[in-house]
Every structure is written in structure tokens, then in C-alpha cells.
Image (cartoon, rainbow, N blue to C red; front, side):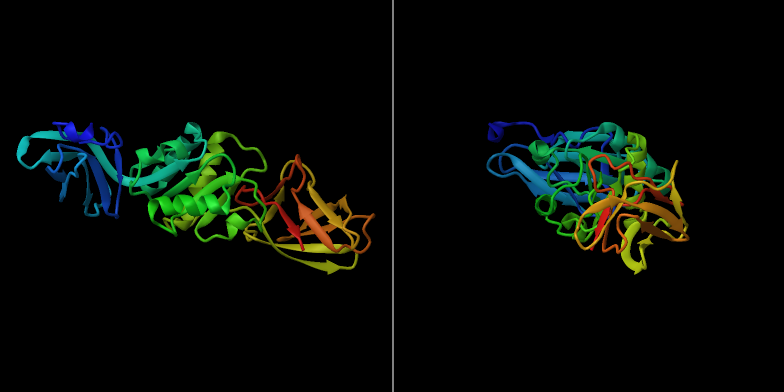
Length: 316
């Protein structure tokens, strides 16, 4: 039983080389003899905790500044100061939780692209739902979700786990502009309709974090549809994130469809006109609806000047 343990120990999360989240209170936990007082320190931060009847203890270190030079995280039993549990080579930087069916290559790319711009250590702590308790209640900057868009209830549940209703959560996928998960605050999608490699997926996720969390002035999104207006037999489509131009990658624009009042969609001829797209079809003389990237294999190829793909959409 935990309550019979004689030695003090840190939880497995706090191993050598761990990265702790800067700028936030840092929960540190582990086991010790029941009712023992535990002294915890890391660099200049110190706190104390008491083990419960089962030997579990948790303490909160005050916020630490970013620190790449190695620190030691130490937990000591107050009445046995010579005995200690120690994690060596500890850094203080940015900690993100990798959730869903975690892809280690994407996680590594995400961390690498953040580190290169922030100039501080970045770690992605991997956890699926089954192993979430292994990392709770860790201090994290946000959640990177792998494996496609999570549903709104799933997003709320993960935020509830951390007691942070506004915890940023970003994912890679192809949810349409009006998807309910994208209506939640502090969410974002790295669009992957063009099937990029894993390194590029990680880079696009890092762009979201850099622009929205760390205020790095970089484009973080491809074109996002905002409105359409009818011009005779044409529809003119307007987009956000098109200030640096629109591009048809590789060949004429694909994956646009339009429909008349009967709701029957036909492939559309689409051309770029400045920061807008004009769509038309001889089968639809009076267009009333448009969609993009809506089929199972739509092969969409609308990008902006930053090289980021447009998000699928339908209108109205």
C-alpha cells in the first residue's frame, strides 16, 4: 500500500530532464510516509506539503521564469532532510499536452518550430484519455490534439480536467469554417486538406501557437471564407487571411461546387481575382449556393501567399 511506503518519491512525470511551465504555479506531487511533511524546491521556488493518510502529497511552486540552464527539483521529508527525491537537468519553458492518438513526429516538429522562435525549452507531454491521470494536474500552456477535430464536448471535458475553461486547444484536420468546435473560444485548426507530411503538420500547429499565444507576427491560417455576393451568373467569394494574395497550387482551382435554388451541386469553374474567387457553371445560370472541399476526396488547392490551405466551407 502507498500508506506503508517509507521513502519519499516524485511522481514519474518529474523525471530527469523534465520541462516545467514558466509563468504559472507549478503543481508537484509524489508519495511519502503517511502524514509526513514534504519540503519541495526548484531553483528559487520553495513550498511545503503534507502527505495524506495514503501517502500522497502535492505542493505548488511559485511561478518560475524561463530557464534553460539545468535546475534540480527536490522533494525532502522534513524530519529526514538527508533523504531526497531529485529530478536533475530540469528546464523551465513551455509545456504543451499532446492529446488524442499522439503522433511523436508531429509533436517533435511542433516543439522544434516553437523553440526556434521563442528561444526557450518546449516540451510536449503525451497523454491519451487512458493515461491522463499520469500528467494531472500538470501546468500546461495548451493542448495540441492529434487525430482530427475533437468534438465540442470533448474540448470542454479536457478543459475541465485542467480546471481551465479557456485553455487553448489546437488540432490538425479539415473541419469546415462553421464547425461547432471552431466556434468555441481559444480553439484553432491547422488545415490539412492537402495531406501535408508530418513535419509540415507540426509547423502549422506551431504557427497557431506562435501567433495566438506568443504574439509572434506570422500568418497562422490559410484563406477562410467570409461572404459571397452574386454578380449575374457568377458568385464572388471573399476571404479572410488573403491580404498576401490567393494562389491556385499546381493547377487551376479545384473542389469548388455551386448550386441553384434546387440545391443540386455541379463542379464550378473557379478563378482568382485579386483577394477574391469567382465561381460559375454553365449548368447553374442563377447560382444560390457554393461549397469548397466538401467531397471525400476533393483535391482542394486554394492557398494564400503564406503557403497555407483554405478551410473547407459551404454557403449559405
